[in-house]
Length: 171
Image 1 (cartoon, rainbow, N blue to C red):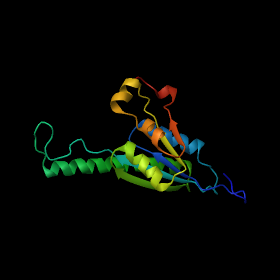
Image 2 (image 1 turned 45 degrees about the horizontal axis):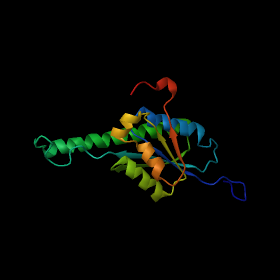
Image 3 (image 1 turned 45 degrees about the vertical axis):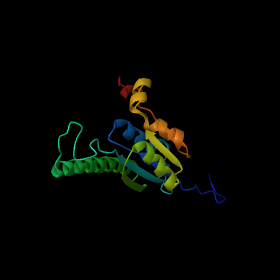
Image 4 (image 1 turned 60 degrees about the horizontal axis):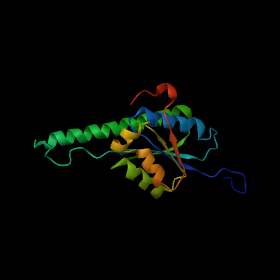
């Protein structure tokens, strides 16, 4: 909404990214269709990656094998590397489209469904953008849907970007 002087209100747009093609497609769509491509744009893009909790919660796995601290540390480094790579890829994509885009990045750890909703509320974002994996009813029932959970729980507008028809295969 414009103020009395005709200047556009600064928008804070949060884009949830992960290592999937769907999240990068959502970011690309947001850059092309949501951000204003003018040099006077006051929009801020917030790139959020939420590292899911480790499957192994203790030093013992479900079968009773003991993981050494070296293995646990290696798993943590791998998780951090994935997060860094995803954020770097997203930042590069943003810079390719807009040289002077205002951008913030966040890497958090937890359940993506809950954490995305918490961050949206905490930062008072104006819009949440995320991709959809396009799971059917059965997969969604077993795996859950992050985008559906967020759509039901955030208080700001949410844009869920589906995969292009040409890229959608059977999942």
